[in-house]
Image 1 (cartoon, rainbow, N blue to C red):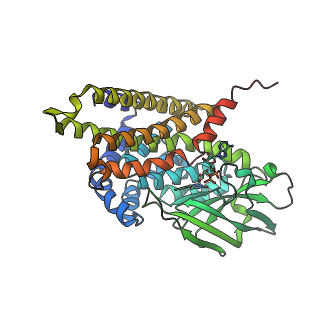
Image 2 (image 1 turned 180 degrees about the vertical axis):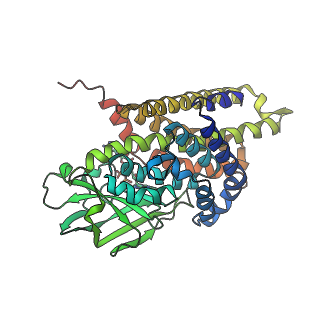
Image 3 (image 1 turned 30 degrees about the horizontal axis):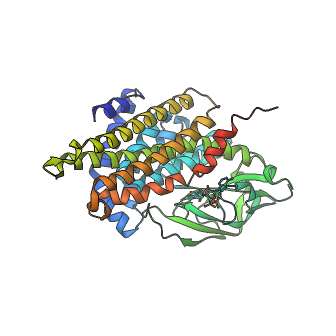
Length: 389
Ligand SMILES: Cc1cc2nc3c(=O)[nH]c(=O)nc-3n(C[C@H](O)[C@H](O)[C@H](O)COP(=O)(O)OP(=O)(O)OC[C@H]3O[C@@H](n4cnc5c(N)ncnc54)[C@H](O)[C@@H]3O)c2cc1C
């Protein structure tokens, strides 16, 4: 595995960042990984993992120092997502969702909003990002949630579906349309809804194939009054904010998918070094070596691309949407492929719950669907080559 150890060293972290990464690796190995099977079977929300993550103060990584955070670079954040997701994909996505939902507040919030809300985020608040609706999935511009201004309040009406941590979040970044703006795209706006807001209801929690410990909730907003001070940007500024936010969350879901892929690859390599058939270890069969070579090469290239995109973001580029789409698409397709092949390499045992590759394969599937399905990413990448005449 030396190859992967060398690749992991690519972000060249500072001593402080290296120390955080070591602590996260230890937490993932000693606490989060051992509890993952229990959480998968019970579908309980992994509160003790959340508490352990908060004890290390990990939300502070993505909150600037002036608002109570540590303001570390994006590569370190991605490395932490990958480590936690390798140990427990559900916990990985719960933590990453805090970033997905709150990074727009860091990037677009007013000074007053940041001073009021970001210290809570840095201290460990759970956050949710609410875009999808029953009839607006891949095409979010058809969302129907409505924001109606009413004095110093905005009344939110409508509902969202498939919201990660929607039932437990302290802060929810909600996208909806501003009443009175006719154009679908220009009406989209964003605000922060706080836990306990009147009219906010959890309608249902989904019973899922994988990520069973991460809750996925359908929410209703029944004339929910939100202080106008919680509106991010101007009315109608939401679509730009949404697209910018997604560009930064896509590398994050790629890091999460790569954590799942790495776990499956490492487990499979250990297993086929031990398991024997026809008087030989499984890894000694050439057909198996070819399979391993293809998977290892894909994994190495994809991880290298992860650090490339991280570098673009850390160096202040705002033109990395296509690179982020390529990364999300390839990392999630690879997670599905590696986990499926890992089950294959375990033979019949891989199909049983005694080994974690069974869970990893179920956990991998959603990575091809969320944060833009891979069909949508192929469209975004392909379309970027059209000459704008
Ligand atoms: C476990 C889980 C967690 C999630 N977490 C969140 C969350 O925290 N916040 C949030 O807002 N959403 C979340 N989602 C929603 C997720 O992002 C959507 O499911 C996803 O965007 C797809 O939307 P859809 O399910 O409505 O599928 P649809 O858009 O109906 O797509 C159905 C199929 O049609 C294909 N398709 C659609 N349009 C096109 C096209 N133009 N060209 C080619 N093919 C197309 C799709 O690729 C897909 O295969 C979550 C979903 C799940 C299952």
